[in-house]
Structures are given as structure tokens and as C-alpha cells.
Length: 225
Image (cartoon, rainbow, N blue to C red):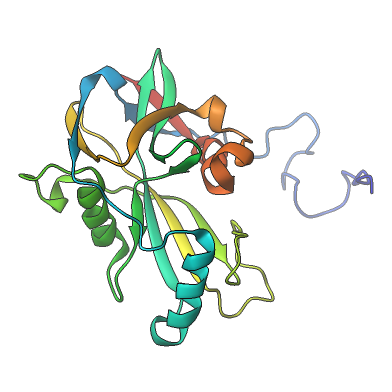
């Protein structure tokens, strides 16, 4: 259905209370928050012991969550969005398992665990050095929220109105990196840097959550260092 033109003489939004909307600037121009992103060449990579998922398949995971729902309630997941740049193009660091499975570093929170502290723990387990501590990771603001209404694959970037008992809540946090660092990657994973233009609208290759990151990150102004 085509949108109908609104009369500019009608009161209400969008309209400046003093000047007509046409030809006017009713809202002040805001500035995007600057995020400093360092070159991929600043970072070094080592290996650590393999890290295995709790479940061997997606179907097995849903079976486990269904069995545990009455005891633990809604499951909470947190993921870290780690950004670098290569030739001044922003890339997201992803863990790759096999040829087709990609995920953000993070995972499932323990019962009652704080989101920020839990993400620091999970980042340390995924990519941290043995001599380091979880507190060496910095966790910034939430980039996006995703909800799973049922024990089924679909995730939504909003909580459907009919859903009063969601089965999963997943949060993506921006994780600013220092200008230099070393990441220890589990032997059964690869750490890959995927450019935003490759992720954009590519849910077939990366899933809807990762494919949505370019849009979610578009509110930031990236400063390349």
C-alpha cells in the first residue's frame, strides 16, 4: 500500500512548532560517536587447547534448552563485537569452525551472572592468554538485542508482542580493543576478520545476527589508527 502524503498544515509530528516542515530543519544535526579502530597488523595470534560447544548440533541444543527451561528459565547469551581495520575498511573478528560456521566470541551466561562480567569471562576463555585475567577485557555499550520466542531457529531483533515467555535473549556488546594485543585462538577454530561489506545483508553466509551488524554499527563514526 502506497504511503499517503500528509498535509503540512496539520499539527503533530513531524513538524517544527514555529516554522513549516518544508524547507526547514526541524531537528538539530547530531554527531555520531567516534570509535577508534586499529589495524589488523597490530595484533598477533597464538593457539590454545580446543574449545568445544556444549551441543553437537542445533537440534541437540534446542532439546537441551527445552529440558532445562523449567529449571533455569530464559537463557541469556552475550557476544563481543571486536573491530579492526584493514586498508581503512572496518572488519569484525569472528570465530570460524569448519568451512561454513561463524560466530562472535562469547557464549552462554551462568545462572545469575552479570552480563558484562560474564562476557569478560567468556572472552578470556575464547581468546585470552593464560597469564591474563578476564578484567583485561573492556566491554562497552550494547550494539543489538535478539530474542528467541520458541525452541526454534528464528531470532528476532525485537520481542514479539504475543511472546510473554521468551526462551532466549542474546546481547551483542561493543568490545574496544587496545592498540596492540595478542589473541590465543582455540586449535579447532580460526579467527577471521570479515569486512562489513561482506557481512551486510548476507544472512545466508553468516546468519541474521552477524549480517545485521553493519546496520547496527552504522551509528558510529570509525576513526582509523
